[in-house]
Image 1: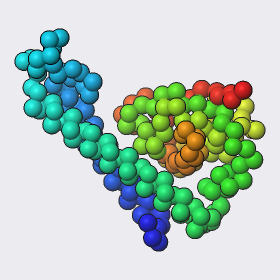
Image 2: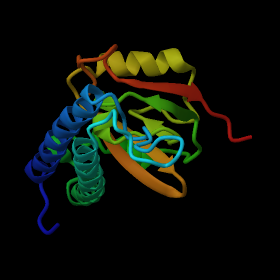
Image 3: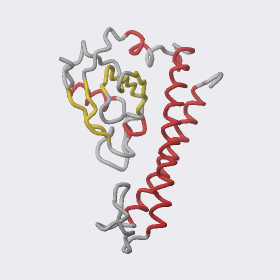
Image 4: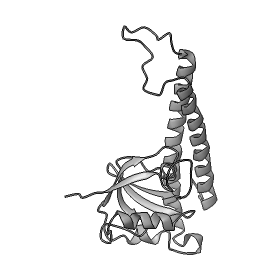
Length: 199
């Protein structure tokens, strides 16, 4: 993305949010059809189930898969744009505060493991995924991490503000931005984290 700016990133995030809303509607449609993405559409003998609206289910599942792929592509584009933006504008928003932690982190050792991410939560919209290993959470890293209460305090203190998170996903580093705050579910973040020790 040539000449990326903060507005471009926000537009991409808005586009992804719209996809999330549509996915929510589609998953609700499946629920009204008494199935999910994993429900078998054939009976024990391998015949199509007569108790289900198979055409509607197949169409809904097809749309979910297509939108999920679109969402993944958008998330990759957002991460790439954020990386480019941070390189171009170390003083983003008139201050180096948002990017300093990622640049000056003294260690890349993971200290938190993402155990669960709730669908449609702030953590979900940030791109956080189950199994991610957190190497930085705002200004917290492995060398100054004191416990999960510290993480909770950071999230609470950043309601409505950008929470910068750096994670390891397999061998790739991902820099994410969450916006903690009220949503349809419980809490203000929507992810369960646990202490992670590499040893």
